[in-house]
Image (cartoon, rainbow, N blue to C red):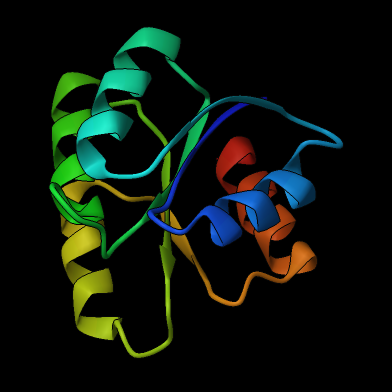
Length: 118
């Protein structure tokens, strides 16, 4: 599967890449929502891992833009536990699921497989 990773933290992007690159192709990494939307248009990934809180354009706005462009887009939000309210907004924006930080390999792969199957 082709995956786009979006997070303003290089450490978090590295962590996700390590978890995913064994079985999936990382087609791009973005540091903010603007880059995520641009890379989505260029690469058309199968799935996007999207951080919620980012500079310039947050993950909710970027998800909204991506799903408006491509209603079949599959976006998984990356959230810290205290962002429950923002998760609701993410689902409204078109996210299909979420994973919580710190990322655990098992839960990341479980979410990815569940969305890929659905």
